[in-house]
Amino acid sequence: MGMSAPQTEWTAEMARALPDDGNRYEVLDGELFVSPSPSWKHQAVLQRLFLLIHPYVEAHSLGWTMLSPADIEFSQRRRLQPDLFVVPDTGSGEPKSWRDVTRLLLAVEALSPSTTRADRLKKRPIYQSEGVPQYWIIDIDSRLVERWQPGDERPEVIADVLEWRPKPEIASLLINLEEVFGPQAE
Image 1 (cartoon, rainbow, N blue to C red):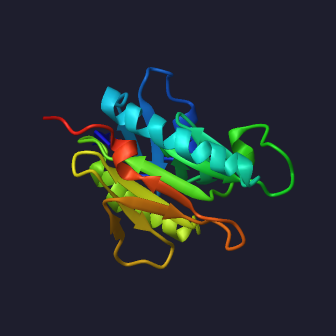
Image 2 (spheres, one colour):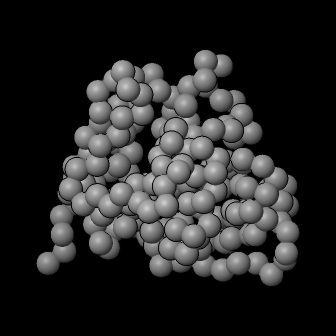
């Protein structure tokens, strides 16, 4: 995330009141983070990943696969915009608003120069402490994924095939990362 705002304790309500100016505003444990629009490459990788995850989520009635912008508010001190995420189906039907989303089955962030610090050092511990079963950090330049689970102190680093199995009774989704990252630049 590009910069941290100088105020000491931000809330989700304060962030919602900020202007709709094309920036993304997140509150990470009371700290406001502002980031510009993502790059084309960033969005292309996320789109390819979405197109692989979405049919699997639908086929197994797991919930809803979404892309940011979004407002996932775990508390007044925690308002995040994961790049890609899965909202679990809790049996109450499709959420009517972002305020109805209080849990995630999967959160994904794709690194960019302005977001690396926040994605790794701020968001990761939040997703872990909120019990998000899997948090993936997509390193586009290195063409790998860091997979974090709630109790992990170190990530599992995956460079070829990413396996996701959100429920033991269903088959795993196997994601070929070469397909996600696209052709390598020469």
